[in-house]
Length: 378
Image (cartoon, rainbow, N blue to C red; front, side):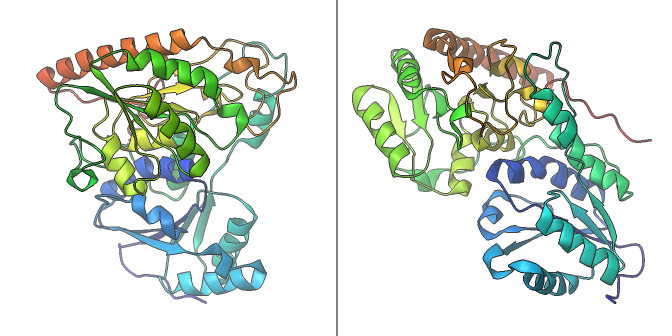
């Protein structure tokens, strides 16, 4: 049996292995929990590459990056348990709740005498949400609230206070020259038009029309984000055809992208990891939703529902993750006029600048996550 820590200091082990957006969504709650309990030690375990997200992390937060291919099967997970048990955790927070983490937390509960809690993903209510023809679909609990519930059940309630990885400042991007020129008086609009599943992607031909409309605005500079040769090819073609455009596809890692995003006036994206990266940088995300919906609880931290662009169709959402083919075959949920999107981007960007100026004068900071509000624990 693993010997646990003594005294008032506790060690809390947290696991979440995938995907990029889900990892990004843990950070606002994780940083808040660490700051609320500076006497405790928090250890986040995930894939090695996700360590790039943990910028300016609290001093009592450690990151352990692993390669899951090294821990296959029951034997591999038992070996992972043995390695992690050397940290002598008092509590285990499973923020993933898949077979791998269920086995891992069972080892800790039975062999390590560790207090264990896991996320309630609300799978049943999410299935109900995606059933066709159901009117008045209700908004489900936010994933952020589901994460926080895990800590509350462990006896660690807290009030979230996260605004940005960069503490409301702009990160240093000197190392990104000459790809990214000085900002000057331009307004920078990030555009991340890609996503993992087709049901989340605004059609490329329509997005190019949006790009053409925005490129006509001399005061705007469009910066494209993406990854991989196919995405790079698409963006390079756009940049060669339209002025005021810059490709940042494949130019840096997560760390560099996050630092650049902190300088954007807005990020235009799908229901994708880029929305959550914008949230971590304190940048407004104008998000386009097709097969999925903010009702499922995946709207980015501190993002405004007014910045969500979507059509009021009864068939939406038909999928939680956007991975189901359209039942009609035409993805009508993405039949949004490019002019509507361009107008929204221009209007909301201008409005954000006005609001930010007012907040700066009044000493206020943005608060909340759309309509998601967390009240202090008493």
